[in-house]
Image (cartoon, rainbow over all chains, first blue to last red; front, top):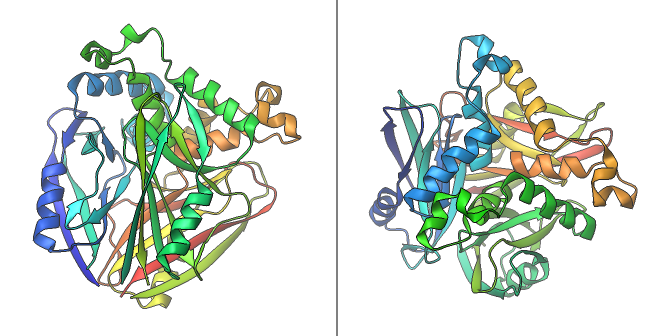
Length: 139
Length: 139
Length: 139
């Protein structure tokens, strides 16, 4: 069995963003030399997500509006968590909707994807340096 | 290490459906001959889900009503994504709630399940041919 | 390849709770002796979750309020599922928001975590004995 590990670093200027990280995951897979196995891609921070969906700008705007309707940022006083001095309780909720991680099959050295699958980093509390972990196991 | 791969194909006549795919996953596991490991089951399309829950018709009706309340299909003009000519933006949201994939432990050649766990394909934008991927790694 | 399996048992007195199970997962990992691989931690019951987030009491209170707003317990007659004699349809929904499982990378014999990641068991229909599965594969 072989394993491979890489971190990706991000510093999103605004509060929220969706970033397509499929090229970096493919690059890590190529460097690993693993032909058959699984790759785990996860946010290492609890106010961010890694998820798979469409790379379409309108959809990302819809996600932004939808997540804000399900877990509004303001008023920040509505959340107990924000009494700790944080203002990011909503980000902990948005992350649960969008998920922490994805696991993707590796077949013949490639991400075994359907036609539109793309991997995204979802930032819900930006303005600081944050990481994504890529871990590959296989042979 | 052994690996095994199978695709399942679906063409749901209506817009939405939940289909129990546990028998097909068990069949793939038996054919793989893998005794200990992990199986990944994921939707290969971004308007569909694979999830684990109860095989109870009333619950599935509840999910249908609940998902429609959280991410309504109509009016389709409420979503930017639908300006691309699609009418399925809501399906991209319903899929995030229900999830893309499940990872299940394999122990002594069987799905290592609790008493009520069943694997479902959740279709949120039917009327076209779509796939689920089963990937097993182990020994 | 090595594999390791352990069950954790819970009996939550009330209906809902969040329990930090990171120490038990670390203990299982140490006992397994696995240095590089993946660990799957999943609820074996369909009205419970395993998820990764912050160990902060205020946030857990926020989750409680938020989940109840997205999928209210009462009136129980609003759900078809409860006509089976159950009163836990809402728990099946809360579990979909919070998720069934997490997959965590193992690197150099440790959970490969960011600074605040902690693993929780989320109970949404307590008062009975329920299980979490830990399955580790690697070498």
